[in-house]
Every structure is written in C-alpha cells, then in structure tokens.
Length: 124
Image (cartoon, rainbow, N blue to C red; front, side, top):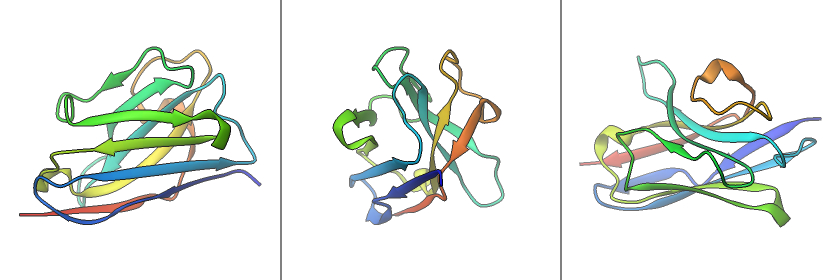
C-alpha cells in the first residue's frame, strides 16, 4: 500500500516553531517533486512550499518566505517542513504531497499522492 504519513502538528503560541514530518511508504520521493500544502476551515487548499527531491526548484508561498523551510532526509524517505515565527493565520491542516518527476509548479491538482494531514494551531 502507498502511504504518506504526516506528523509533528500541534498547538503552539504565536512566534513559536514546529517541524512537520512526512514519511512515505510504498512509494519513493526520489526523482519527484514534493511539497507541502495547507487548508484552513472554509478555505481552499493552498500551496506552502515545494521542491524537487534532489533539492532544486524550491518554491515558497509569499506568506511563509523567510519563516518556513522545506528539507528532506533521503535515508529515511522523509520530508520535513520547519516552521518558525508562527502566526495565527498559519493555523490549518497541513498536507504533504508528491508530484510528478518533471513538474515544477505549485498547483495542488498536479500532485497525485497526498497524506492525511496534520493539524497546526497557532494561538494568539
């Protein structure tokens, strides 16, 4: 079976930090575009950060630039999202996803594999 499993979400105060993890089983990240998206209540799923697994073509949403960082551990087949200086508007369910091998964009529709999501809540 193919699974992407996120972890690391939780409740944090404004200005705090969290690190999300996404571990893949039954599929590889190697050679593909991988990314993080989020969805707040009543809103559409939005792009947060993405990169080629090799580390190139990295993009961040303007709202998280300078605060969030995407990284990976190839040996563990795990993707990370380090989130610093968190704000209440970062509150959402965060999802990791795998896109195609040649895709370089940020559209959720171009990512075929998704995790179940992990809740991040930032209190003011």
